[in-house]
Length: 185
Image (cartoon, helix red, strand yellow):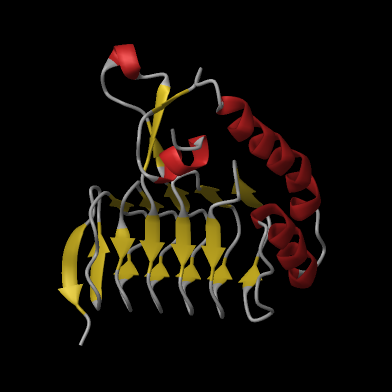
């Protein structure tokens, strides 16, 4: 049998009463305990150090994050070089979130990899799918990226968009739900 973290990352349904869910709770509780120091940090360097502790990987010094920053888990976040994450972003990362190099994240962006089944009998389970934001993409203020979405290289997601489908390389997407607006030449 796969470990609960492998099952979450594989997109398998995981019940909240799963016998291994205590492992998830332990990571969540650790992240919750570390988050106040992250959000009280007084410099970009200190924020980067505190977020590095939460995600378990040292962030490159070229990456800048502004507080407040919210995550419920943290261990499945991967952030490249020269990334900028503006104020009040929320990353729900049990399905995995990857930001490649040179990604720009506007304020109040939500990256959500976690979902629940539609069937009420199964609703107390989690379904997770990863989010991938490719090199040089820009996510506008207040956008929400939903589970399983890939944002292409050089793509732009307009402010306030709700993205439920992949956005191709070199395009602009916007709206609710987001749709292709134009190609970037």
